[in-house]
Image (cartoon, rainbow, N blue to C red; front, side, top):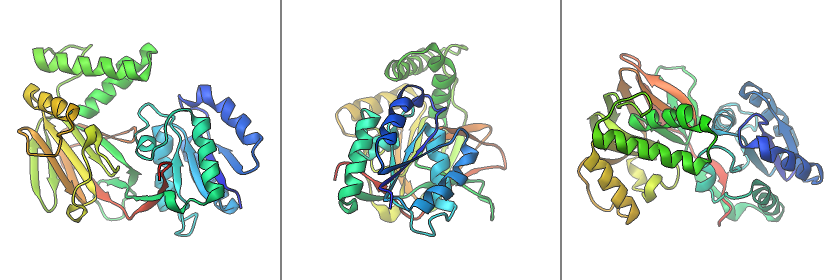
Amino acid sequence: MVCVALLSNPKSTGNRQTLPRVRSYCASNPDIFHYEVEHVDQIGRALQTIARVDPVVIVINGGDGTVQAALTELYQGEHFKGRVPPIAVLPNGKTNLIALDLGIHGDPIKALERIVALAKAGVDDHVVARELIALSDGKVGSRPVLGMFLGGAGLADYMLYCRNQIYPLGLSNGLSHFLTAMAVLVSLIFGIRAKFLPPSSKPVSISLIRDGQLAGRFSVLIVTTLERLLLGVQPGDSRRGNMKLMAVEQNLPALLRLIFASIFKRVGKSQMQGIHLEQGDTIRIEGNHSSVILDGELFEASEGKPIVLRSTQPVPFLRLAA
């Protein structure tokens, strides 16, 4: 049995620098089965092959699109006949939210060494269950796309602004995210609308099947099944549903409340005007050309064509910190 199966996408941005080191490490380590794909439509065949070597752990090494496609295929492909090994994600993409949630950060080679060591010693104490978000149009028979972090409303527009306007400048991820945040604040404080600033968010309606509806313009819309929502929000009552939702109304006071509450780790401790924290197992998003981004892939809700989110059954992941 192979200890670790590593699925890499050489074309992801992070791999342009790190993949030669990863290849060298794998070539000298017989405990790793390394499979490379250049397009996400090759991931199904890659996982068929990986299933034959029966690894202890599967590691995904690619950008957000690679991770999303691999999670979708692992959950729906039946390559492992219902016994999917624990999944780990190397820190590679622009945001690395899934890797951070699993305690995997820093140098990818050191993370891979740690994963191999755990696979040899026994992973039981490091396996955690995470539900995935299944995104579809809600119609019977439609094949959903799966991920773990969704940004919508204004947040999706800001992410697209950062991707299309700031990342091409060649700056570091941290500086790119800082400049995007400053541009958002300038547009909200001064009400400026210009091509070099993020656009105003479109109206959106968010329905939680058991807990009513939110409607309006939101500067931040997050839905996630990660253990911690952004800004330090702790998991809530799972009986209300496994997907955690944060919606922040598009006005400066609400955004400032969120910023200060996150600094002092007070988000979710009490109700705050303009900030909505909910949980659910089915969430419906409707709007006129309102964008959402699920783990790096763009989707759009339009009139009569809502986006429906449902949580899946738990999937095993490998967390480095026990």
